[in-house]
Amino acid sequence: MVNSQQTISGSVFKKEQPIGVFDSGVGGISILRSLVEGLPMEDFRYIGDSANAPYGTKSEDEVLELTLKLVEGEILKRNSDGTYAEDGCKAAVVACNTATAAAIKVLRERNPQAKIIGLEPAIKPAAITYPGGRILMMATAVTVASEKYNKLKSQFEDSAEIISIPCPNIVDAVETSNTNSDEFAMYLDEVLSPYKENTVDAVVLGCTHFPFVKKQIIKALGYMPDFFDSSDGVTRQVVRLLKEDNLLRSENPDRKISIYNSQGEEKENLSRRLLEMPL
Image 1 (cartoon, helix red, strand yellow):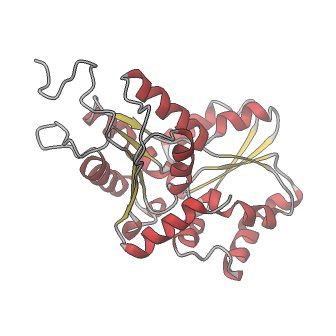
Image 2 (cartoon, one colour; image 1 turned 180 degrees about the horizontal axis):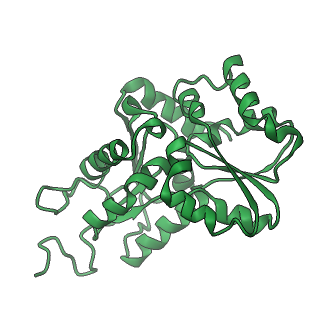
């Protein structure tokens, strides 16, 4: 039986709907920046869950529950009968490596008609760029321990040395605007001390919060490695998936970028500052 929402194009969604971006806090703004630049005619709705951040120290079941609630409830606007409200989004970007690792499979199974884009650490482009090199992958503890990440890592361990380190304090520092403190500098010095002399060729930023402390990472290392993150790949994937169902907008004179955060106005203002901050 054909879904009551089914359109001629085969999509239950419409061009005029925004693209939704979800993160555990303000970190996903680094992905939103790339999307805003790469899709200049699209509206965006950003949902940050700073009230429950950091996700990287929670269990996978907790992360799954939170992600399902916000992606389905606030971005896709999924109804109890499996249809979608018209004020929902035409695509959902899970702009959080931790949430992707814990929830992307279930989200796609529950929402087969929806465009759901997840993240994975940019190990592949780093390994291709530096065959035989040393690659440092910085992420949350949940991402580093996840089955999804370790499967990805195993595909490239023969071509490069991949060193994975959990760095949960970075998320806290970005969420609290504490990235320029002496305390945070000392933390990075400690975490990165093994790689100051024994240098790495590339650093993979395996959490969307981490691009906002790139300068601090360079200072702690004492040299300039090559950096890789997921933003460009996610943007290309969103464009490709929306093209499939003719959902890309060709004009939008009154573009809207809406930002919401479960912790309220303070985090929403921080998100807007990060959106404009040079990286």
